[in-house]
Picture 1: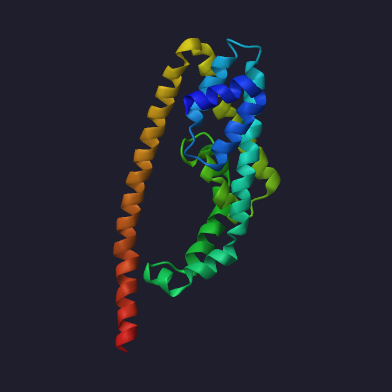
Picture 2: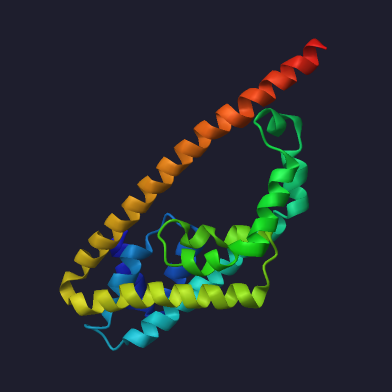
Length: 214
């Protein structure tokens, strides 16, 4: 993968960086922790400049975020409420009101998470989906995405440029942080799933069984 990224950036320069970061935002498993320090390193061995790299990466972040924002708009509140109101979802403890409450919370207090999450590995791309589902104002979404992405891209590109030929050490440190975030997220998910099973799924299954017996 590193060879592919190196070839794209060396051949296409800023456009290659834009494409890679755009793709990384649409498919989060692709590591920006590798792309950005590598992009910074290229500014020490080519005519490419650090500001140019940061701008290209940030434009890639924004345009990629629009794709997932659009996916969120397609997964509208109404469609999700209909889906989670089906019998299989009810047996899993879900209720249409859960979706409505989550979207309302995002409207009131969650929009700033778009800015914050753009600087957090793993969730930095996926946050665009709930923003789209909540129909967050496009201008505000663009501004928050721009600011958060610019910070993330500036830090990693600058560290890569400063490290020079040792840019891979920046990637290793960034990936270590990313792994920690992944483990924290997994732990949270496990706790939430256990809570959900106890508080929602088991009562819902009992209620469904009671309806059949009646």
